[in-house]
Amino acid sequence: MATKNKNSNKKIAVVGAGLVGGLEACYLAKRGYEVHLYEYRGDIRAMEHVPGRSINLAMSIRGRTGLKAVGLEEKIIQEHGIPMRARMIHDLDGSTRAIPYNKDGKCIYSVGRRYVNEVLLSKAEEFPNVHIHFNHKLTGVDLDNANMTFLDTVSNEEVKASADLVIGCDGAYSNVRKQMLKRNWFNYSQQYIEHAYMELCIPPTPDGEILDCIMSQKHNADSSDAKKRKAIIVEVKL
Ligand SMILES: Cc1cc2nc3c(=O)[nH]c(=O)nc-3n(C[C@H](O)[C@H](O)[C@H](O)COP(=O)(O)OP(=O)(O)OC[C@H]3O[C@@H](n4cnc5c(N)ncnc54)[C@H](O)[C@@H]3O)c2cc1C
Image (cartoon, rainbow, N blue to C red; front, top):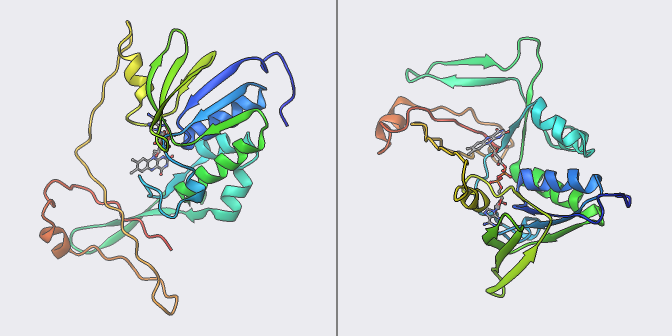
């Protein structure tokens, strides 16, 4: 798949094999780089329960364009996507109204986060120049020399590795970013919004009937942290 080219002697370390890291590894592999993908967690494809967020992704043209370049758009959208044409707003008085995502009838798609991550990992693995290292938690990185230190979470041993370039794809609490903050001219700020979200899974009835989700006023009033929670996003997984 990847051909020998001028990039093949360049080694790139991608830290974090989430949505971004998995896709990034595929892009770099297509360009012929030797890619080492390091992931804190084990292989999620072999896990019964994946720790972390599970809320479905609402995929729009932005995400689809990224997947298209590695030949995965069709597979993910056609085989797995659930069309979402509008957002249903549940008012406190019990009334509902739908806000369409697009006035021309186009829609976004709900796709499982775990599924997309798994497909990306499998795609990355198809490239002979991608090497995935699961259970490797980055604990330190010397960005000037691209030297990294990992904790092998299975053996509990320290692992040293080096590359020509390190790319941090290790998510919201990025360790790579933490190291960057120690350098000059690096600015960073983080703000939390005052909303929270709640993920609900409402399965169909035993007869396969899909239930309407009703957020009653009582439910909101009874919630201990209702005052803090100004918006509740309800996601119904079928
Ligand atoms: C509630 C919620 C809903 C969202 N809904 C949508 C949506 O509908 N549509 C959409 O496009 N986006 C959505 N997003 C945003 C989307 O989740 C993020 O943009 C996306 O997950 C970012 O991907 P990532 O790979 O950067 O990070 P992550 O998906 O968090 O992956 C980071 C990876 O790095 C690994 N890692 C972390 N630390 C280390 C370390 N020290 N060493 C090695 N590996 C490490 C983690 O284990 C993980 O696998 C949502 C986010 C939230 C919080």
